[in-house]
Length: 338
Image (cartoon, rainbow, N blue to C red; front, top):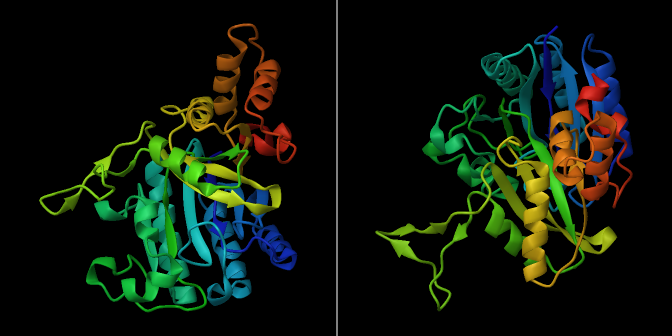
């Protein structure tokens, strides 16, 4: 059996009625399984994880997207996390007996159907991107929902599917195919986002804008110069979590084989120590592959343990994954749920 994951992110993190309707929409799709639904009220965003074969995963993604389109109004949305629409991003991920090429085709079929049904512009990203400047999600999101109406007037930003017309209720959708992404946040014992933003800029692959001693942006031939970040395949930003009175270095690890979870955690700790700030554990949003935790367990066990249970348990402990909310491995590790 083929197993394909879909991890749609929707711009609603507070309305329980909407979450209930989303769950019900998936029950009607034969063969598509809802693995998790994780809302965040500060981000005002919910991350959903679905799994199925090439047919059921497409129908499941369409069903939950229709539900979100009915329940969410972007004209009223405010939240910490960058977003461009109600159905913000819909990635398809090969997990077992499926290829990236198949996931690209599924994302194209999804984009074609949902754009027609909802009359909404859709951009393709990552492995499905048709233009280099649209490969990176953050580049497509620049200006966010608030800047989308003006963006759609630019011929360079005509959507891949759907009309180049501003949909005030839904905004736009970004769909595509990618490697398994680990959404990973490290907690800082500070309410000042200066520290989390500073660390994210140092570590993320895209780095930061280079400045001269006076603080002015450095340009060469009119082009802004950037200082590259330390960690490959890492996207990051600093955000505030007011209900916990902390901030987070919020990261997307887009290839955990190149930059593992434990490496990202230890690098944040290193930079936080330089700034005189303490790290207070971390959290994984959505699901995580077993392999990623085993890698962390092997690192922290220093060859003292070799069995799966011990390695997973030590990874959870050393990464502080239960600091904010209990980390239940049977509900968070995708291998244990499929």
